Image 1 (spheres, helix red, strand yellow):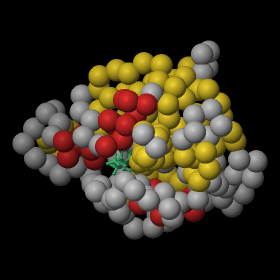
Image 2 (tube, helix red, strand yellow):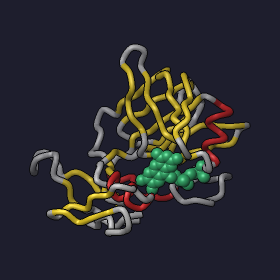
Image 3 (tube, rainbow, N blue to C red):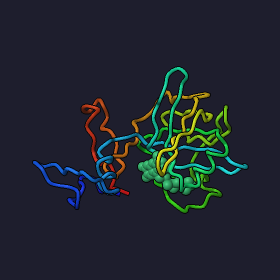
Image 4 (cartoon, rainbow, N blue to C red):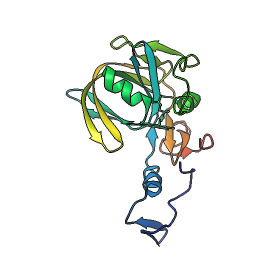
Length: 202
Ligand SMILES: Cc1cc2nc3c(=O)[nH]c(=O)nc-3n(C[C@H](O)[C@H](O)[C@H](O)COP(=O)(O)O)c2cc1C
């Protein structure tokens, strides 16, 4: 994972040009470093398979369509969550606030025990799907899989939104940027586009 402020190192297939690294044959590290410049929100995707909760931190989440209402999440094939969401086709997404960084770190920890992984994460059950939704998130969507598409080592899971819920007094979002968690400075304090490193990279 790239550290905040770092940039792709020059390697075969790349040249330095006027303060830029120009990469003609992207390595995984160069690709990851370039994509890390794209700031995203942070979510928890969740589903329940055979009575066991599956949940993972996911930043590859976006809205797709208004009519019908569709969202997508990209799920790495090697994760346990991939098997679970493929089987259940019912899932939820909780959009995390900036004070929920510990939840994001925990549910991104590979190899954590599945049983009891949500014991320390306040959550409730979604009315439409029964999946765990993280309390105090900014908003929640519940979905059924509308289509799954191949996406290299990930599957792009497009979901039809069955229900949604927005926190009335939502705090500021948790962001992921240059390989680290960060947050927005409160809009009233400065422009919303300014970011500050809130915590060291994970
Ligand atoms: C900020 C952040 C964002 C992530 N986004 C995704 C994502 O969008 N898709 C994905 O498959 N994994 C993503 N991951 C990795 C998963 O959270 C991680 O592999 C998780 O442990 C998988 O859980 P599982 O093994 O129980 O399925 C992300 C990790 C971090 C730290």
